Length: 178
Image (cartoon, rainbow, N blue to C red):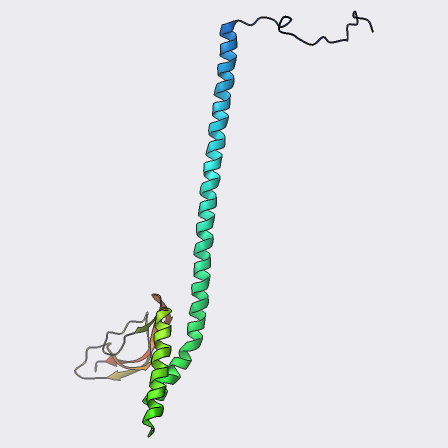
C-alpha cells in the first residue's frame, strides 16, 4: 500500500487539527452548555409533568375504588332494609312470651347498630315538614291543629347512607281544609 493513495485517510492528531481561536472555542462550548441546560430543563419539566399525571391518576383510581366499595355497600344495605322492616313489624306484634319478644328486640337492636356503624342513617319524619327529597307521600289527610304539609304518620321508615338517600320514607301528610 502506497502512502500516496488519495483515498487513504490519516487519523487526525492534535498537531494536524486546525488551531481554533480560544474565543471561538469558548463560544462553541458555551453554546453546547446552553443547549444541554435547555435540554435538561425540558427533561425535568417532562418528569415533573409525568409525576403529577401519575399522582392524579393514583388519586382518581383511589377515589373510584372508594366510590365502588361505597356503592357496593349501599346495594347491600338496600337489600337488608326489608329484613330490618320485618324486625320492626315483629316488635310491634303482641306476644304472650316476653322472653321471645326480648330476644327479637335484642337481635333487632344489634342488627340496627351494625347497619348504623356501616353508615345507615334513619330519616326522622313524623311531626316534621314534608320534604319531597326524603319523603314519599302515599296518603294525604285533613288534620286540625297541625300545620299544612306536616308528616302525620310514617308507613315505612326512610334511610340515608353516608348522607345519600338510600330509601325515602313513605308517609301520610297533613293538608288543611279548603
